[in-house]
Image (tube, rainbow, N blue to C red; front, side, top):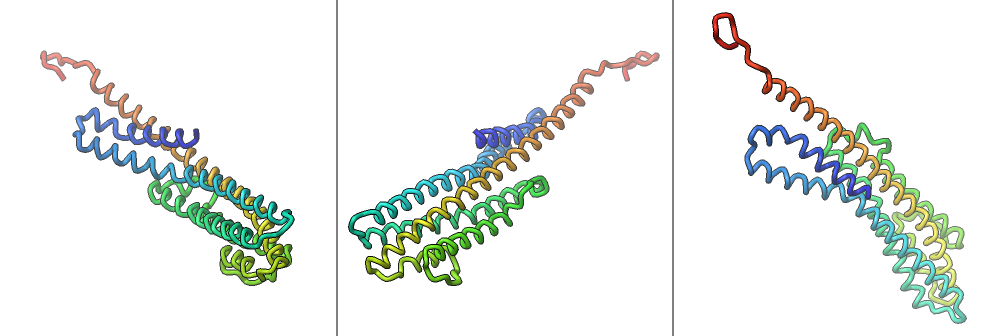
Length: 246
């Protein structure tokens, strides 16, 4: 619903800002170019919504990986090979989450470049929020590993942290510890992804508010221009005492 509002707002702004050209007899080529520009801007606005949906999907996948690990831990005979596969899946999902976190900043930069006034209206600095989220996500994984008894290291990324889990001894006891650590990491990752989802929602709201303001401004300008044109068009002719018109 929010994406539809953004798109409708964008189309309204674009059409309103060019209505004067239409009344003045603007050419067909200019109109076609404007439609192409609108479509390009719609794609820009859809990015936050698409990332929001991807975060939601990643949360579901992490939850599934976590449940699979729990099932393996509770099984009568722990099967390390299956646990390794689930941990690899978890590693991939964490990397996917990290990439989504970077997209928060990339989308903000693209929108700010397109609309110069946007950066001054957004209540959240999404570039800073992206960096903070990435750092917090890594810290949460470190904390989960420590809680699970895995040796703490200065991991360069979430992926390297999870690869440490996979490198634990392949014996049943080591595998069990790794699976337990994976469950804790998955839990932390879900929490972080939920926060990232909220950030993407806030980004959509900020873009929506900006476009609504732009739409209102363009509508006011257009109404003023039309009123001015109408006044001059309807002004009656005046005649001088000499018989000529003014």
